[in-house]
Every structure is written in structure tokens, then in C-alpha cells.
Amino acid sequence: MADQPKYNPLTASTFFDDGRSARPLVVGTVPRGSLAEDNLNVPKDADTFPVPVTRELLARGRERFNIYCSVCHGLLGDGNGMVPRRGFRQPPSYHIDRLREAPVGHFYDVITNSFGAMPDYAAQVPPRDRWAIIAYIRALQFSQHAPLAELPAEDRARLGAGGPR
Image (tube, rainbow, N blue to C red; front, top):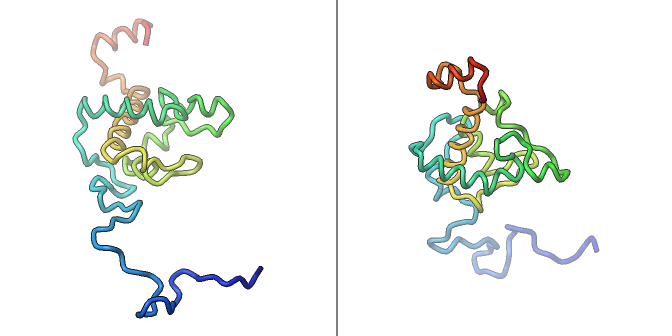
């Protein structure tokens, strides 16, 4: 069994006249997994959004987050989704310092290429929706760590009076 006849990839072959086994791609072929069509791709350390962050983008991000991300990360991004409750590995909370300080390019890379136990979602989530999800993640992070000075006066007064948060 150790000496079975087989062809090794990219070795010389007598099948074609030029002796090569690898054939040139047909004109117009786009390889699967190519980032050539992803004009929203950024480096991992990028900290600016390549799309404008609008209410519509945040609404789309919330919708996509609830569909693809909340099953593991939870609706609040705290890592308490249904999947970890069923015994699978718990993802980190988006509210820890490491992820609050992570550049947006990190999140784009993780959604596109996977990280740890998380699979990639490049085939399921188009690039613009990835940015919508990332914008929503940033909104979730801000919602849990908003500085008191940035709240409206009536909300600050209510918090000072011990009212509901």
C-alpha cells in the first residue's frame, strides 16, 4: 500500500505536450475564497470604518448580529448565547477590555477568516454586512460602558437619584 501509483500535485507529466501537470486558469476565472472582490477588506490593525456608519447600517448590523452572532455571543454580546448554554465553548464577552480596545480590522478579520473555536463566516456574511455587524458590536460595547458625561442631563439626573438604568 505504501507504493501505490499516484500523481503528486504539480509534478511533471507526459499527458500534456508541454510536460506540465498544472494548467493555466481559464480567462475570467475567479478562485473561490479570493479577496479580489472584497474592496472593503482592511488590515487587522485598521481602526476606521471603510463605510459610513449610519442608523441604517446599525439597524442592518443588529439584524445580522441577531441572526449569525447572538447564538454564541448572546444578544448583549456578553458571550452567553444559546450555544454555550448547551455545553459548547463560551466565546469572550465583547465588553472585556481586550475587545473594547481591539481595532475594527480585528473583528473584520475574525468574521472573514475565523479565530479560535469560531468558524469563518465569509461565505455567509457579505463584506458590507460584516461592517454592519462590527458597527453594531461597537454600539453594544458603548451601551455597556458609556461615560456618564455623554448621557443626556435627564438620564444623568435619574441615575443620580437611583432610578432605573
